[in-house]
Length: 134
Image 1 (cartoon, rainbow, N blue to C red):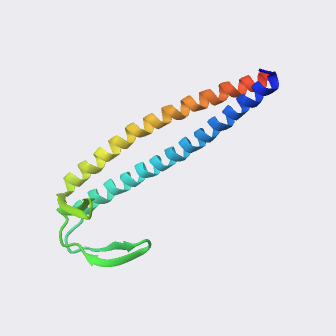
Image 2 (tube, helix red, strand yellow):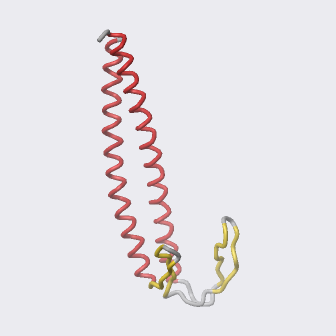
Image 3 (cartoon, one colour):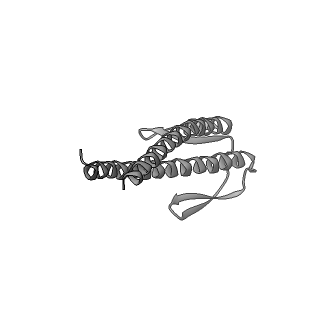
């Protein structure tokens, strides 16, 4: 294989790795956002459990649209378990559920970060190979 063809092939591999790296980075960003959302949810449920009955609250109806309401029960929450099915759970049960989701998400973040580091390493190695041939 000629040096020019070899450089071209390595450059195509380099571009492919860069695309993969970009996709992994976007996936990491999404996972980090989910992690932040879980933190917000855990905090909200925790605070709701401490809120006095009868307090006014705003219940979200749509994006940026809220309904004024009064807190009637701060011990049980209704959660969607899929397939348009809901169940009642206590505040500690919901917090435990959210924390389990967060733990699973943390493991996924670690895995994806390891893949990103490996791709970065491969990309840098390939870049140095290309640079050495040019």
